[in-house]
Amino acid sequence: MAKDVIIALDFDSSEKTLKFLEKFEEKMYLKIGMELLYREGLDVVREIKKMGHKIFLDLKLHDIPNTVAHATKSLISLDVDMINFHIAGGSQMLSQAVKVIEDSNEEVIPIGVTILTSMAEDQIHSELQIAETMSLNELVLDYAKLGKNSGLKGVVCSALEVPEIKRQLGEDFLTVTPGIRLAEDSKDDQKRVVTPKDARELGSDYIVVGRSITKSEDPVESYHKIKKMFLGE
Image (cartoon, rainbow, N blue to C red; front, side, top):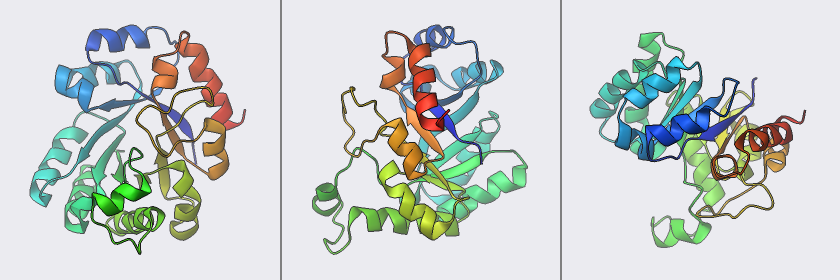
């Protein structure tokens, strides 16, 4: 199973995004999220895809099943490589979206968001009203099981949750892990944070890295450093 580093393009304009990408010579796996897409529209996805990069379109779809199914059909027409859904939307929403992808015969990986890595244990009880008898790790695992049973190929989760997900759901069930920082970096708004080396040892399939690369004085060097740490090369 191929592992890779996904760079989060958390820029607020196409100009800044393309200026950043000009620094690199190789083709990469890139995450386009709400900030960039809502500012620039779908053309930014098309333009970056034409450059030969892989794209993880991070919109965390969550709505009634019919709406998400139609949205999925629109998004896969962009030739993206990975899209995600909030597992909290339920099995009907997820399974209908997966069927749209399967019927399209496009090579798109559908994954699910469990609990955002910006959330801590106390918040799932005090804010989400999850019973205190259930831990954050147990909740993530339950969401992951729901996602797999609904046809998803993997989940977005903290690297700290990967070993148990792999143990219970199998090595082929993908884990995409944000909340990655170098030891010297600030955690910013993330709570459940690990280094690229930690993520490799925990079994992550993909790590999503933003500021440690995009805010670096030398993004290319930082990218290769992080990729080497993660892949163990």
